[in-house]
Length: 235
Image (cartoon, rainbow, N blue to C red; front, side):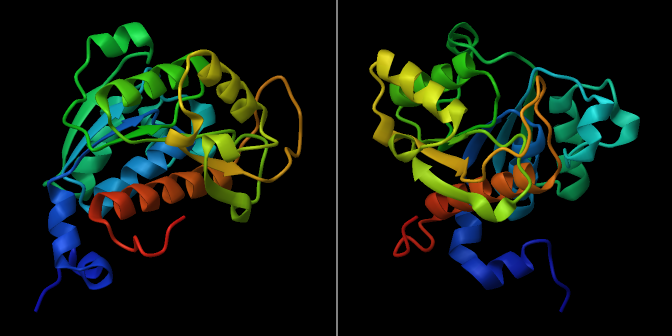
């Protein structure tokens, strides 16, 4: 008996969960080191409908850590590359590539109301706050990636609520902005690194290990919530 792309997944989480994922819709904002791995993991898991959002084009400097892209795609739109990558993996996932900068203004023109989950892998604080507001307004769960640059140890990652974060300058800034906007910090789930930054430079340094591990942790959390799998083991 031949196996399908979902055979091993079904053995792990069950046929009902696999069928559930095929009916789910998720939006991934930011397709770099974190978001790209989260996106590919969700595609391979069989999530049926995914919005792939990024404003950038592929740069050569992305290739040391961003799983979606190859050298022949330098200069191409990341969102379109994500679409192509997904189709090379499986045909039954609907991917909608979108090329725009996330802000309160741009989100007003977009409809992600069918999404069961929003995934924030963007770097810009204003964009993160805009996604938090959108999440509250539309009552859609949001998971936020915090600072992954300048770190090397993927074992230092953990999932917490935004009000439980500490030691990360990005998290501190996001908490302050959210408080000023009256957003409930305990509503938002985050992936954060407890590792102290190894270097402090004008531009963030990065290799593949921490961003990709963060993307995998995000996809695990989202799949767990979408399927109610392992809910007796909260994290």
